Length: 328
Image (cartoon, rainbow, N blue to C red; front, side, top):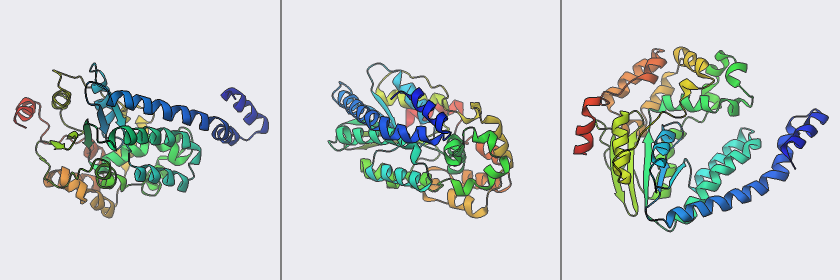
């Protein structure tokens, strides 16, 4: 049944939600089955290819899209960008959506689930070789970025950045968003899937990246705010090419909500309990130097969120790029 026909039915009965209901009932099962078959074929081809596939496997809003696009430009390399692979992680996502009354977005969650399940079935469980890229980001900045990325979903209204007042966006930031997920991602998603505990060994905080070889996996973990030239060299070395080129992707400051986003950052006041939960977490303390966390804590608590958000890490200095990459 064509989408336009569903819209006409919705208008006739003056009940807009009927379109979403009919789509779920009539169209999504067919699309879902087709999508699952396509993903499984795609992953099977990649696994059977001459070079190991690359998974850009990271939580949302950590510059993973830019890394994936840079790697996709390399001829002969199959690249999958994915946030969830584990069955438990996918189940938590679906349960969270139901709890928040977001069942109507099941097709979006279904797409995430289908890719994750295909990778699990064809690559992870058979323990096939793969190269893994994951990125980390200061948790408060990451949460605010993802909050704005999902505003329309969380508020269940189109163009929420325009229709919901800034005061409400700030007041309900802590209640409408699942903040701890960034802190738990490596323990609840990455480790159960790959069998790799990133916390088992120290992370070189001053360098901002680390290589891990574990079983069939060659893993690169890096901070999202490394100098682009260093990230390009690390990615190129991982896949064995001379160079790749990064371009910013999915950047909040360039989106339709950018003005509201900037104002939110300049005015948001976060509680001490929240800041300490985020910056005092195992995740933050593992990946970020104590001095940097102290500076970020002061800025977030002083209402200088825009400064904290845009802070450049002390190790991201262009003149050190080649030296660090060569001595890692």
